[in-house]
Image 1: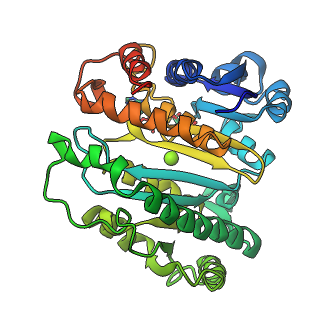
Image 2: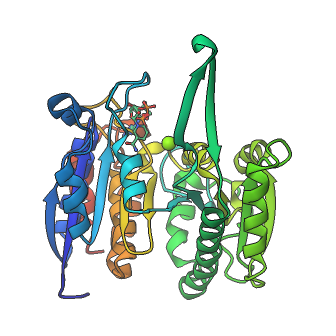
Length: 372
Ligand code: NAI
Ligand code: MG
């Protein structure tokens, strides 16, 4: 491990973000690495206090950091003048064009075995450009969807590179790391041979689109991805229409390796995929650019459980592991992943998993297992 000090921005945000980000911070602080944590504001609460959801200080100080951990912010469902989602703004400002959402079998209730896929979601365009307008005296609402060849090629290249890298990792690791998940008593269902667990099977990228209906926008995404695929003859490529993709991913998730999708489809697919491996409380994500990574749980601010001390911290702790991996601290990242797996395998479960462990207890249990 290195001797350098990593300056990490912590942006808890609202609701359970204020509980799970400090949990991830404690786990990082327990590693034999040096961190300088900088806490920054964003979200609904700070908007109500100051009139801005992403203070200028946050937007500028984050640039002086090596990476960031974001909790979640609460966004109103109606338009509120002056409010803009801080996570969307940060993704744009820092050009965090790839949203990487690993979906891996967990030794937890509700997790199916033999799943090891990575959803690579385009993070800068599609309907998230938020160009909406009302016409016809408010009786027609129109949203503009933007897909560019540049962003599509860039995300496709990322997906194919990652598919290649995952195969290499599998070869090194063989099945060791995932055995724990698959041998757990709760996931001892008959498990089909997994595409992504077998180091001998070539990596595969599944391109998700709806080009049969949206032939210009999704057509361009599809075409750009297929063009990039030709640069990676060692990676298998397939395409799947988004609706049947969700169906098939739920029926046979173990066959998928890397999935690449435009922004909205990737968002929806990844929440659905989280349900296959124990739920949103366990689902991490990384917003990656070429020079900076901001990690966050897939879940939101969970107002229904906020403030009760029962939020599952695992998603954010696993996201912190993704951040370490992006900083080249792969060994420390794996230590965190193993500690989370061991904690779950020891039946230490928060309420969303059907257990009684509080956020605090789960975090302490994970820290205790970091040395294993
Ligand atoms: P949500 O993800 O906050 O909650 C969905 C369900 O999952 C709830 O039942 C919640 O209790 C549960 N849950 C989520 N995280 C959990 C955790 N760590 N431990 C245990 N249970 C957990 O989604 P919802 O309710 O649709 O959105 C709530 C707010 O969050 C909204 O204001 C929304 O805009 C915002 N949101 C923010 C995101 C972000 O900041 N990146 C992402 C998604 C939603
Ligand atoms: Mg989402």
